[in-house]
Length: 245
Length: 245
Image (tube, rainbow over all chains, first blue to last red; front, side, top):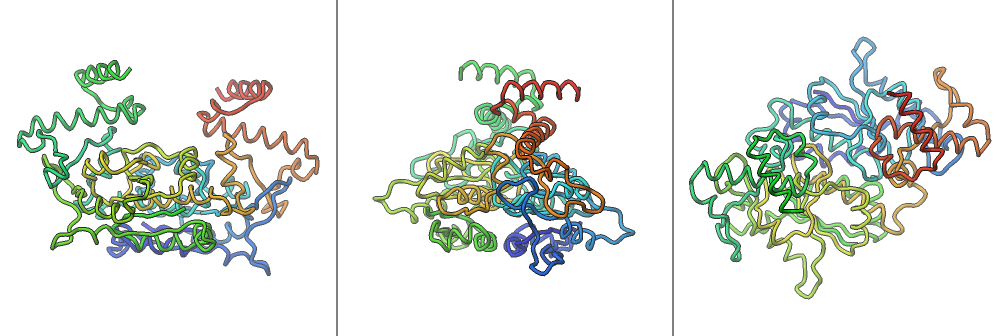
């Protein structure tokens, strides 16, 4: 996969793109990552990429020309147009399903604004997707782009070895993960639950499934509506709901 | 504010903590940011910080000792215990309200796992908050910690000048932002809406408010339930809902 990121702060990406899973995926040649400073496409003597909003108001707005020019410079005319993703608070909320969808693409282009808004013509005539990573205010689209790229790259074939584990399990199964314990069996007087030391696989599985259900019920009851539960698990949840009420 | 981050990948933070708003806030002395590699607290000959899960299963689990030791080394015994935040998929979903709550603290400590799960005793006996930034799977807690730190630091007094703008407006008003335009008035034949060039402030305000309502209705109708609407705006939304149906 090839990923290009348009940003005014390419240096923000260095630590993240060099480290860990993303760094390894680059070394293995599974993903090619490239940042483009779209200020290089400003094409005016002060190198400005933003301007005051028409109609007044505070803040600045990113001009259409540099962003169109930077994107068009990345794509050969004979090439199919890739997904062009604008990171913005007004976008569709990013989810694991969207990560899976994007992981099937051969090429992605991300556009990151910073402080400023985007001229609406960028949304209407250039981008294919607008994404938000959550309902909170950030200083720009750079961290959101890194989050989406991390979620997508780890899904590419050959990227994850046996390192998946807990971070992966939580949403893919539709329930929150059960409590995990490792050595020491007793730490400052806090002991690992006996069932986990029993060696009895059936009981361990049952305990873990119930703990997952309980944690999901307490923390994210919204997830239960789409979870695949047996009739017995449904009854267990109903009983717990009554107990909590 | 002082922020400490426990991580196995301190180099991931350099680009982000050095740049932009967070970098400026550090230069001004408004926030002190410190990363701690908790592998330095492993205290065993192979420097291991994780181990196999009790009860079996794939993946590794972060051991309690290094993380307890690293946190305790940061806090003087006579000091009040700060908020200690575990970044994990099972956590409470981070929101702008949570960012405001954390921005009122004097000190925050973040714990970032990577691939692995956390020994449950860390959750039960050390941390004060568990946070998730959204329903997607990432390779670790580092990017989520950066996202939370960015959202919190930009709220600290003296950090933002007049740079707030669009990124700020979207959630704080409870509606998505209206379309923004800047020069040129015509770009590739795509024109700025006439009302914005009219100079008529009343009409511009009305157009923007309606555009905000329409965009929120189409993209994030869930936000409308908590928005502060006039009776006339309620009627406008109801009419649009019927038209869309």
